[in-house]
Image (cartoon, rainbow, N blue to C red):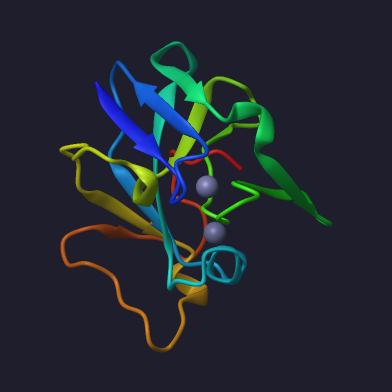
Length: 135
Ligand SMILES: [Zn+2]
Ligand SMILES: [Zn+2]
């Protein structure tokens, strides 16, 4: 069992099942949305993910062009969101309370990485989407 929550603990969730390795997205949109160089994301199947509390309060921002982010309205922490195909949850690794025991397997949108950011050695790098990512 891996637990996660936002900074104010307004939302909390549990993962009971397999999780993916992490990817870090360096695109300019994730950079703005997180205030960091990149967001680290992992995925788990719908059946493995359960909200403990706070699901109903989570806010969404739909950016024109089709990009969506979810976040806690009280503290602003990015929140897990269901993929467009509704098969997996995409989970910001920074909101996990437990060690997922996974590593960063790939860096995506390295083509738009900030000049002050860097990638971790040994991970795959893609200028845009990686081969296994959901659009
Ligand atoms: Zn919060
Ligand atoms: Zn991104």
